[in-house]
Image (cartoon, rainbow, N blue to C red; front, side):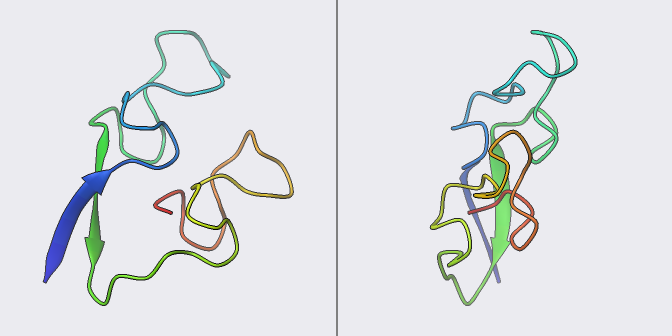
Amino acid sequence: MTKIFKCAYCNGTGKDPYDLLSSMSGCQVCNGRGQVEVEEPLKECVFCAGSGQNPLGARVPCTVCHGKG
């Protein structure tokens, strides 16, 4: 079963939070939708603490959860 959540990487805006390509670029995690589907069992990513951002380089999605938090 899957559940839909606000994208942790872009905070639900659907836009690239760092404007890496341009200010019009869509979020690479949710593909501009602002939401992501997460399969159960639901667990917060321990690597990024649910932020969706890589703690080693905050301008890229978490490599463990792929930006889903």
